Each structure stands twice: as C-alpha cells, then as structure tokens.
Image (tube, rainbow, N blue to C red; front, top):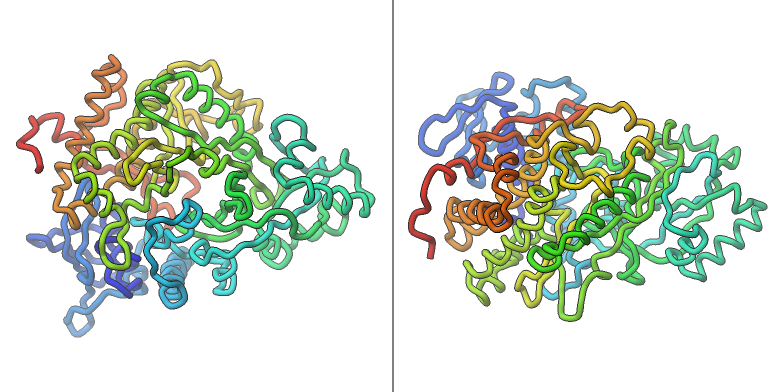
Length: 581
C-alpha cells in the first residue's frame, strides 16, 4: 500500500524518484531549472531530468515516472539506480554500498507485494498497525534495505510479516555488564519475564553452577544471536563463550513481534508489557541498527527527567495532553569494548498500557499513506468530521505538545512520524504519545527553564565528562533545538501529510502551513512566551535540516546539514488571505 504519489506495483520507480528528490534537496547534484516544472542535472558526465515542483521547506515533489536519463544515442529513457549512483562524488566503496541498499529496498518491496495480502488496515490493533505500516520512510530512498537479512530472515523477523518469536537470553559476567534497572533486580526480572520463565532462568543458572552475584541477564534478538555466532562479530564473541564471560540459555519467555523500527519488539503474549529495543547488526535506512553504547544506561535517566517535566506542568494534562513512553531500564555488555552496542537492550513502556476505555492508537506516519484502493487511511475520519475541524484538532494534538516542550521548557525531541503515536476516539484526535528518548533529546543550558531534574550526565558515562556541545544531549544554543524540532516534526514529517491533503483532498499546502504558523503564534500569546518564541525563531528565512542521504553517502560520523527555505517566513510577513473552504 503506497504513498499518494507511488505507482502501484512499481517500487523501482519509487526508489528512483526518492533518490532523485534526495539528491536535489540536499544539493548533492547541482540543480538546473530548465523551465516550468522541469528540473535537470548532470552527474558523472550523464544528463538527468524530471518533472516536479519545490514544496514546503524546498522538498521536491517529483512526478511519478518522470525521472529520466539521456542515453548515448541522445534519446531519453527511464533513469536507473546504477546510473544515478555511478556519477556521485563519493568513494567507489561508498557508492557500491549505497547501490546495494537501494536495490535491496526494491527487492524487499517486491517480496512484500508478492507474499503479503493488501488488506484494509482500519480496525487493527496498534501492534498490528505497526507491522502493517509497510511503506517505510517517505523521504529516504533506502527505506527497506535491511542489509544483513536474507529473505528467510525477512519472513521470520520482518514487521510486515508479523511472525512471533522468543528472545534469546544470555547470562553475562557482571564484570562485563553495565545496567540501569529500577528497584530490586530479581523483582524486575520476575516481572519482565514472568514467574515461570524466571524459574527456568534460575534452574538453568544453578545447573550451570553460576552465581547470581557473578552473572546478570541480557536478551538478544534471535537474528542477532545468529550474527554474533556466525557474522562479522563472531571473532569477538567466541572468546566470551569459550571462557564463560557469556553463557547462552537459549530462547525462553514471552513471544514478541517486530515493530516498524525492526529492532524494537512488542510483546505478542501480553501487549501491556514492555517493548524491548534490541541491537541488530542490520543496516537499514540511515545506519547500522546497534544501540549507541553511551545511551543505554542514560535512557532511563533521560526518561525520568522528561517524565518529571511533563508531570510538573498541568498544561500537559489539561491543554496539550501528552503521554511519554519512558525507557525505564537498560542493560549493555562490553560497553567500551569491541562488541560495544551489539549486546544491549532497553525496556520501554508499551502503547497499549497507556490506553483508556474507548481509546485507540495509530503510528502517526500512518496518516501519510493510502490504502490499497487509493484512498488515504485518514479519509473516513475526514469524511466523518469534516476536513478543517479534523485537521485543526489534529494539529493541536500533534504539534502543540512538542512545541510547548520546546518553547516553555527548552527541550527539543525528535518528533518524526515513527516516534509519534496518535491516540483517538473513533478517529477524533485525543492526545499525543512520544517515544524513543535515549538518543533523540536535546536542551540548551541557557534556554532550559528548570534544571532541577536534569540528569547528571558526567556521572552516567565517561564520554560525557569533557564532551563539547552538540555531540550528545546538550546543545550550543537555541538554534540547534529549533533545527531538531522543526527538522523532525515539520521538514520530514508533516510535509508528507500536507502533500497527501493537497493531492487527495484539494487543500493547498500553503493553507496547511499557514494554519500551523498561526497555531504556533497563538500558543506564544496564550502563555506569555513571546520572547522565548522569538528566540526559537521558527519563522527565520532559512533553517538548517539534516542531510540524510549525504551523511549515508559519505559515511559521516557526525550529522551533516544543509540550508532550506522556511515556509513560515512568508507568513510572518504577510497577512492571512481568505481562508480555504
């Protein structure tokens, strides 16, 4: 089931088009506008062209099937991924890797289309929707690469397939472990595993002659266990198994299903129990999906801080209802060694455990897609409540909690579509849920409203002690917070929704974004936050945004950014025209 511009049964065309859009958006190729809606560029001595327009924040809106290249005989033909990648200014191994990810994305999309039914998604549970959200990232062209998985792995562990599986459990020498576990450790494991599975652990540990004082527990994704025994990391893990720094107990406990993020798994036996984020040596979208070692034991501390901030502000209960899914426990082995980030897990509260009677939840990025019949997923709700009433309510629920956290409290979160969950009653937006805080939160010390509950970062990990701003959680200034918040919430999130509403419901994108602008301005006036609002500067003429494809192409260790035009700037200078009806 596609995005609104996708051609049915043509994942190859979608990947080519998203690659072309990313190359143009990030300035990786030099754009020449040759008139009207035609774009052209040269790469590696070859000419390319396509049809499209530039949307909000300069996001290219390319016409399906229009990306072409000129052949040696001078004729134009459909562009190929190989030709588009060949001419890029990057080392050959980087280009070879990128092309492999692009071709693998096409291959897995075709596998899904052949093997999975395209049934309607309304009425499914949140966990089912997480798996059935098969479209992937609407911007990044490597949205389903999953390098490391073969087709059998995809069939067993791909979220779209929805298979159940148990986690593999290790006993790890405590001298090799770092962990942040709330309260009594045995009580924690008994609650997470359940009494029966916990007794199995105790019995096997006793049979092995291993002491509770000397060994702690760590779960692995079953694919990761295979990777660590037979993949690139095997030479590093083998000595651990040989000298009993690690002992495998095998699969046990509850069954899980993969979420849309692949490495985070949801409890299939009891949906109210925790989601578990697990390290995976799989390359997907932008990076290898291990877990940053510094973040594992920091995640619970950040979650506690954010929870205290939200609970201490009544606006998050009464005006901008916001629920957080805290990462309340973390365990990592070999934090500072060769296996760093490959043996790690985080426990996070599940969405299902937060829902009240009559409430349902959907992944926010489901609002950008269409069903098999070509109609948007959100179409029945728009028909029921009316486009403008429903949209205005959605924007209040989705935008204002994130913006209030930024402007009032000085904290920016990575609120992209995968990290946001919409709670609704029969399609009417009720509140927002946010998740994934261990590596996606920033604050500026001189803009933070209250540092009372701020974690003691230097005490959590040695890397934090002399680290400069903008490397971890503390930013050099308010501009960095604006970039994170606007990048994720607006540039790579709501732009895809405004595109869908323009194509399927006839709402001009400028009308959509003016409503967002007026919402932000009204928020500042309502709370007397005009000065802090101006410091954030959401209406600056240009803003920075992350160069997702360039970062992958260059295999950059630090984020790379580029400047884009800011659609909010025009609204700050122009009075509102007659409204859209």
